[in-house]
Image (tube, rainbow, N blue to C red; front, top):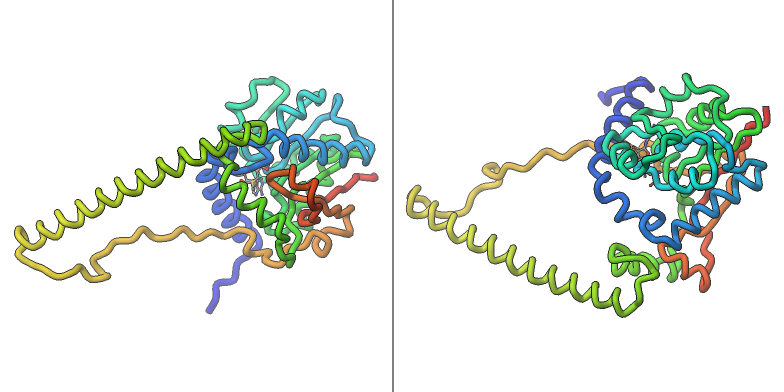
Length: 304
Ligand SMILES: C[S@@+](CC[C@H](N)C(=O)[O-])C[C@H]1O[C@@H](n2cnc3c(N)ncnc32)[C@H](O)[C@@H]1O
């Protein structure tokens, strides 16, 4: 019979899996996420966030701000530069929080390894602005999560949940080109790096990666031949090893947003606030050619 989980057990499991997965990603996170490492993309997302707050009557100046699921503290410097009086960043992953702490040396910024579900109770009516990026889909109970976030907002406070993918949409040609460009140039500098330098870097990487592969192949072949010889001469046997002899590391069970496989902001929490579609591209320059509405942000004002 399938095991029945109580809600608390599922939440614990998802928290553990999330912390583990994001601990693993912490070192490469900033290199992988275009809105962190590409200045133009970062500026675009910051503008989206700022506009969403301003249009809902909140400014970062003198505001107390919380980011839930802050990861490596993507926007902390900009929040502080825009005059926030206090910035809290919470995340489940200790390694993400470590990276965030290393990046921010401002005493107004406080980071804590904490889950939204447990942090909220101790911080009622405390924040003017709460935001998150690429976070809501990690929650076991998104409705409850949004209610917890609301409970931490002061009256008139604003929550903006950025960067949530819309469901059931096919990629446009521009989005696919954007994806490929990410692979080609995403990790080798910003758009401000001249094209010829980016192409030179790309070629250099290709040459390096081909020569690495040749070396690795050589190494493996060498090892294989030596092992074969060893088995044949020292152990006096020949023939291949059977499947049972091969040890494989057991795979980690990754419990996460699979629990919410049909994730839709409108369906789940649309009644709590506004769901605004916008364009998500790594190379925002491509927006000049096409404006796909492939992502959504969620905006909620605590009217009480
Ligand atoms: C996809 S990452 C995004 C990180 C960062 N906001 C960014 O945009 O670069 C989502 C983050 O949310 C954190 N997280 C997931 N569930 C959480 C929860 N219940 N409470 C606090 N943090 C959580 C994860 O550990 C992870 O670092």
